[in-house]
Each structure stands twice: as C-alpha cells, then as structure tokens.
Image (cartoon, rainbow, N blue to C red; front, side, top):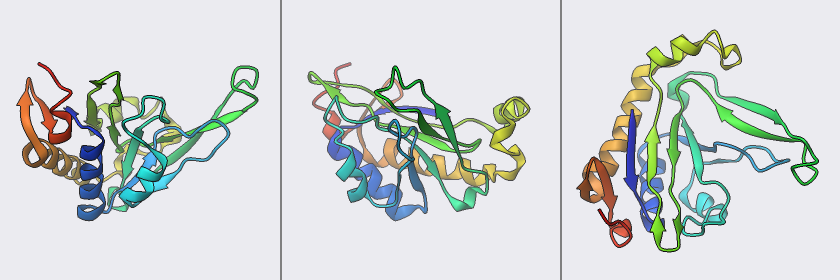
Length: 182
C-alpha cells in the first residue's frame, strides 16, 4: 500500500491525535540524529515538542509505526558513519522491520507543501527479500492481517474523514488546502 496526501502542520497534529487515541501504535523515528538513539513517541504533544512540520530546516519528519499486535521484530540497526564527514559522529540508528508502517510528513518550504506518504510493504515482497535481510528476523512472525488492517484504518481516516478535497488520488486535508494547486 502506498497512499500520498497533503497535510499542513495542524493536519499533522490531527493525524497524530487519531493515531495515538484510536490505535496502540508507537511512533519511532525512521533515522536517529547522528550520535543519538532512536526516539519513540506515544503522545502528540511529545512529537510536536521535537518536530515543527512547517519548518523546512526541521529534523527529518519520517517515522515508522509499530504495534505489539504486529508481533514482528522491531530492529534498531546501527549505521557506522565516517566522523570526517559527520562532524565527528561515528554512528546513527535506523528503525527497521518487515511489517512496519511508514509515515512520512511533507514539509512546507517557500509556500510549497511537499506531499506526505503512508506506506507499507506486502508480506509477498517481504518474503522475496527475507534471505537477503536475515537480521530483520522471520517474515512469518508478523501478523500481516493486523498490519494491513491498521494501515487501512489510518488511510481511511485520512482519505475519507480528514480530507476536504481529493485530486488524482491524493487527499488534501483542511490546512493543506491553501498550499496545494492542481
């Protein structure tokens, strides 16, 4: 599943409020800052303390969503960095797992709003790559019906309940309406 939509900062807050009140999902950074651990969030206000979605120079606003109901392995992969090119930092982490739901929020820059994305890979695709990425554990440990159901629930909420317009399959949320021109 891959769903693109437009969401301004106040829309992001509404989406996060839904995720944290209507699901048991935990939001993890896709990548940590250099030299830092991955941060996780279970409240909208904690996310908004760290991320300003209207600021182009904000830290990366890409997240992985995971629930204990998914049953699969959540992996924090350490990535070695060359300190000569990373202001002395030698590592960062990425959040990985076969059945994670990706939520990437587009940012506003010079009055242009990037699209946001909700996506996940299929069990079929994960099985194709399982032998290549053994460190992610077994694909069959994941409850793929639960993963799919949760992703569809979020997509339905965004596309059918929050979007005030739709264009070419994109949902356009209320706050984003002023920035999106088709």
